[in-house]
Length: 323
Image 1 (cartoon, rainbow, N blue to C red):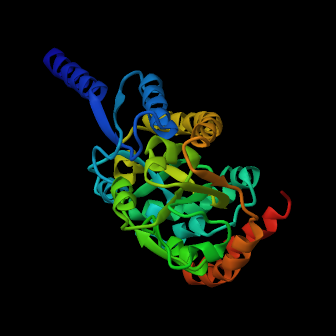
Image 2 (spheres, rainbow, N blue to C red):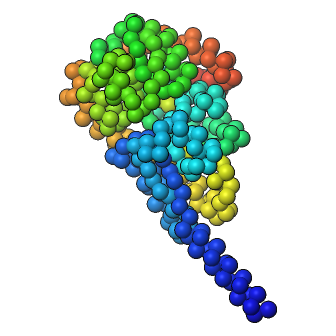
Image 3 (cartoon, helix red, strand yellow):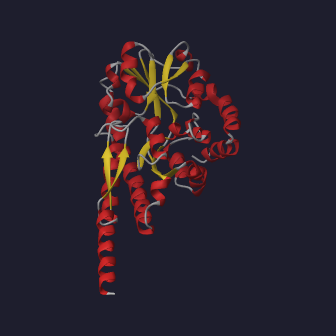
């Protein structure tokens, strides 16, 4: 009996030691100074603290373990434990996620966060779990704007232009609705594509444009705020289910705190980045938004039906009237 108890104690200690040394990989697509990357470091620190070191996260930045599309697949097969990608990058496994890419469905930042922090948004993304992915938190990515080699003041200025977009059918159709051609290109290849003329422009938010130095290969920045597409902090469902109940609770708590942390970090970074960009572009254009809204309005009904999210789109448009 004494020997049996001793062996059991030894095994328990071994499991405890193995648990303490469990290291999980997180991949991010942004460079280290980007607010999303800082949020990853915050999340990793909190997970380690809340689990007393039982779970440690190896944070990788700047696509070190693959681009967004590759990361989603790695997450599903469990090669990666965590990743943050745009909601648009999830359309490859659940086309409903492309609803977030629809232009002008969010009136402003308050509308955006009122929805994202609601039970309705949580229910909307829950089916991803059946595809091997769990959404832990929404990560702010601000409003998206065009930058290009020629000024874009109205949708007509997009006619004949090739504009880089994410691998999202809705984003391609959005640019087409405005008269241009949407060209999906990996984020890490965009600088060269702009430099060599493969595309004439692209679209993204202030911090991403500044951190990737796209002002070096584009002259004009048009702040039309045509979309607010959230990033999502994701965990492999298989990995999540391998956690103990206490570890699951700790990871979820750390994710909630990371979401709150990012909202503050993003607001500060976005404002600072815009001020840094002002002298770096030839011109920052602040156009009338209504012509852009009018150009894409038919797209909302068409794509809402095609994606099977017509009710959710209608809800967002109605909700937007309150803001």
